[in-house]
Length: 226
Image (cartoon, rainbow, N blue to C red; front, side, top):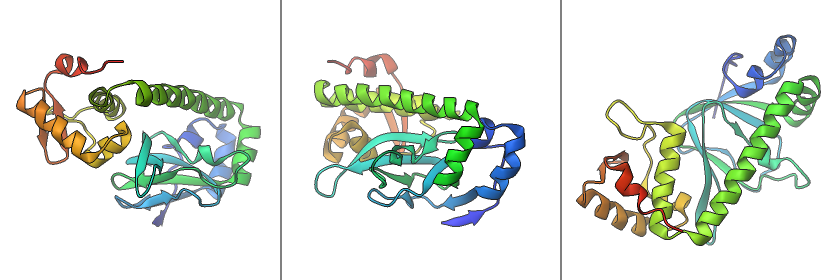
């Protein structure tokens, strides 16, 4: 973890705060850089504050059985991290890990509370974040319970594309491992590997290392069944 200068015009906190509040933000917030694979915060750690991403991508996970993790969501520039740690339990129920080199802004609990009181727009936007995440979490729980495994893997791919987009060659902009796809879809690496082999054999999917390209979205969509 490396401390860096704050960039006041590039994070969720500054965008939704009053102009006059930004001088306080400059004094109170800290910007950190994390290398790929490094933990931003760990499940079970005390909640000290909240994080705002302004560069890079992050996976948010929780423990799932012995030495397994379930990816709850992927986060990118403009997203908020650590807000699930607020409430009655003073410990993070989740972990956040950098999927690529990233930069995040951090503010502690006391300044967050002051910021929410002084900036109604920030309070409103943070409530929207909570509401949207709750809706997505409820849908994901339904999918994990009722959808067949191939459908869950396909849905994971579409959701990753929706979050990160594609590059000029049509590959998903985020390079992601088969294990992370499995952890997001609630299945195993072996299942994802076998299914990808099936899809590439049919020309529905193309892969190059961790780069993935969907050649036939309609054919892929057909696997999503409840």
